[in-house]
Image (cartoon, rainbow, N blue to C red; front, side, top):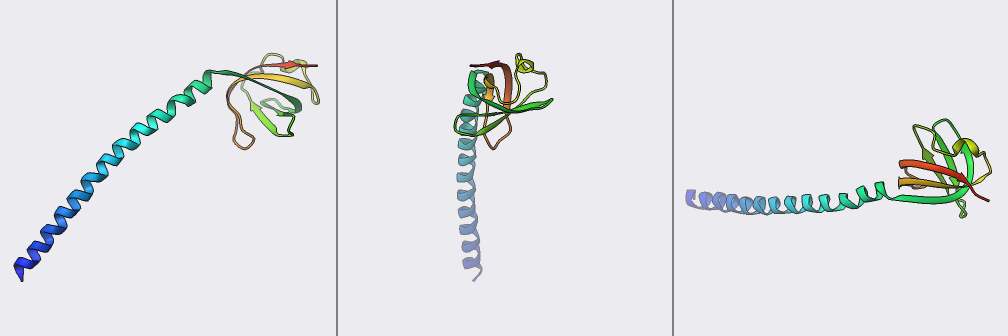
Length: 118
């Protein structure tokens, strides 16, 4: 009876050791994948982009642009970007910026300039 119990316990320990060893390999692969996906985000942050739309609202720290598909985008800033003081609500403008914009997520980047278009 003792031999059976010792055999069962040893088998369980060997099985647990094998399963635990496989788990370490997966963790290393996850770290590699994470570092690869971070590189494109850094490149997007430096690339200058443009968006054309109508100004809906201007505040001290942000303004809202609505594109031709009636999708509003909010741009936040710490210092007023060049040209913002020359435009008003209802004007069609071209915004130059870096970073990423989304209609649901907050603006993550920098506004370079705002130019009134005709």
